[in-house]
Length: 392
Ligand SMILES: *Cc1c(COP(=O)(O)O)cnc(C)c1O
Image (cartoon, rainbow, N blue to C red):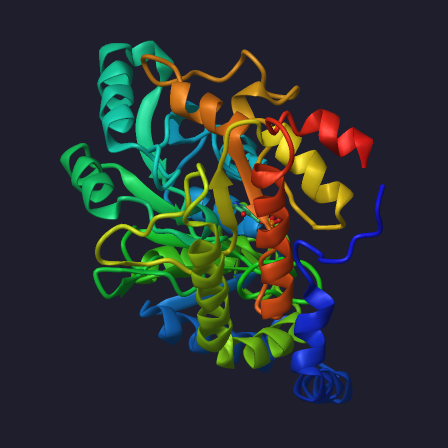
């Protein structure tokens, strides 16, 4: 295996970009003597909520916890059915199961890889026709790779059937649809601030946003033992507090989120220009959407061969994700699927490949990556890739 010359993602490079400010923010927290919740967390919550255009922000320990707490605040629990996609991070489905609900998996659209409203409508009809499946309660759309899901269609169905919508925004900090940020469309939204996300901490972190005061208060209690006031548990809660160090780091990074997303978009443009003549599907942005390119994902034939070829050249490619959730060992054959199954999800998992993508990726690294893809297509003989990669 060749040495990796171009990493797929690079949290250290992002740290170095803002090093002086981040170091100062960390030192301030160390000197303050307050390490959990407190002023830093409250300031981050307010600044992030304002940035998104939401009323309330509730900092928590991870994106998974943000989903769990948001679902519980909406009253989702045992006996409830929650609709989501299988083409996502396992965390989306894990959170639904961890609150005791059943995840019913829906197919995705071919072009944007997000929840397909037609498959969603069919799944809703199916649950209503078979009450033994459980009570239909909520939808969790995922704004995968940084592109907004079809929120107008999803909200329309949700309103029609009185369902909660909890947006999984873990890959789409700052993305907009019709001038409105993702995270403000549903009842609540969950964001992960894992280090490689568009807004990343230097450890685990997450945040929930909502417009609804009752939901916000419920989330606030839940993250700290269900406390309404100190040592008095109003509801049955848990511990999922955000710590001050992560909040202070996130406050620095939030100032540069739009600039970082702009870098990702410039990189995406360069990729698209360099690759437009090859027989592959480039990412597409739907009208009215602003794509923040958490990942730059191609659809290609002979994906495995291209993957092996690029890896051998030291180019950090990845698969997001190699297996849909319903085909993962822990979930195989036990999760209900939308009528007609998930043909697009299953096909995509064979065709997707994520190229290097992070705000510090250089123009030269993008050029090296696209030149390698060109050489794969233009190289001698048919690109049976796997054999050629072995010969390298
Ligand atoms: C990263 C991610 C999560 C989970 O976030 P953690 O902070 O790792 O718990 C959930 N959903 C999606 C779509 C993600 O990308």
